[in-house]
Length: 174
Image (cartoon, rainbow, N blue to C red; front, side, top):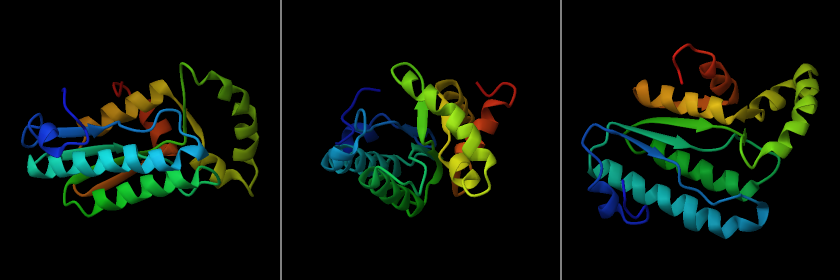
């Protein structure tokens, strides 16, 4: 669709009743010094698209958030958590995906960290955090998005990193 994600009326015209809305708008290359942009882009676009989805009577809203809690990127996590709260109170069926870092084109440097994650996942003191903040591949992210679109929940469903990994292994999920 073509529209302005900051203009609910523009977006609502493109949403059919009962359809699924997938929100993929966000600040490019998030970093700690972009705190104002997180609210101006990520937060504002979610509020406008959510308003459009509700007025158009969408059936399902899919939102890509971020793993929480997290030790870094506090402003980013705070804005995304606020967006999740709005979605939870919206009355819509909602799927929230919470990746931490998606490996793919332009993001290959992080592959060097995978051995550290492997170790951290096996140490009792760090296992839970390492799994929750684990990296996922672009293929896994797409598979989880497709699955979420094809399987709308009743109410609100949150897919954390371990579930995103699992969904990528389901035959036919991507």
